[in-house]
Amino acid sequence: MWVEHERRCSTRHQLNVEVDVVDQSSRDLLGMLVDVHQEGFLMMGELSFRPDRLYQVALVAHVSDHQLEVIPMGIDCLWTRAMGQQDRVWAGCQIIDLGTQASEQLARLIENFATDHSVPTGGVFW
Image (cartoon, rainbow, N blue to C red; front, side):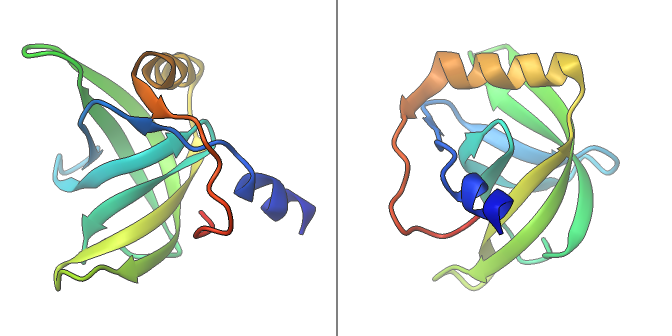
């Protein structure tokens, strides 16, 4: 229970850059990043994105007109909730596999593009 509580207190960062969540195998777009921290993220995803599943994804940040930042990782989708739109869900994901280089890339992405460093009070756990 303590670990779960600690994850809820992690500072989430909204980024001022568009970040796609892409399946590493199929290259299909799974959704778009909403906010992130070093241990997980919230995304708006496709209806086919399911909780209690593991995914190999890449965060693809559109950092300039011609440059993409690609950060590969393994994630566990902890939960999904339907959005007001019929074919979209909110999805809370925990990062479970992140290499050293990818971890450094994620830290740089957050450092360079974070716009909101606040911890939501009582918000949705992810």
